[in-house]
Length: 163
Image (cartoon, rainbow, N blue to C red):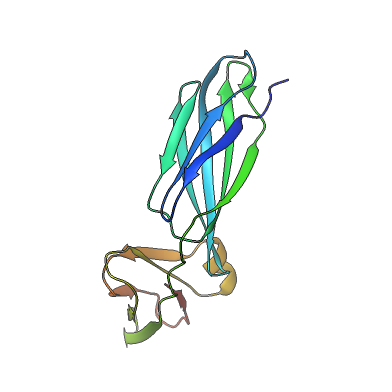
């Protein structure tokens, strides 16, 4: 039986998490697949995937958001097959930034100008869809470090926007 890998949180701060991965077995490990999940608002779950080569590993994941819950899952790729998943949860330190105040204005039938307030020197994600289900599962999206963006949409549709 292949055991699940051990994920140990080494440290964390406002915008990063450091963790180590190891296996408690003599089975040869060729690498790990790690997923980091977090949720924006209550509508959109994000994921970052890391493919890591080697038997032991210490990783640092940066560009995270302060005071946000993150779930880290990992499985090992071994000579006998893939291991089961293991999970850890961690909340970054600091104060979570205030939610931006979004305004969306139709320019014409296929373009919408989105603008918002918020801190400078950060990257914003703009998500949009024609239903809450689509907004949660598979929205259209763009990223920008400015405070506005023009997005192209289909004519004769109503859209929901989230920044």
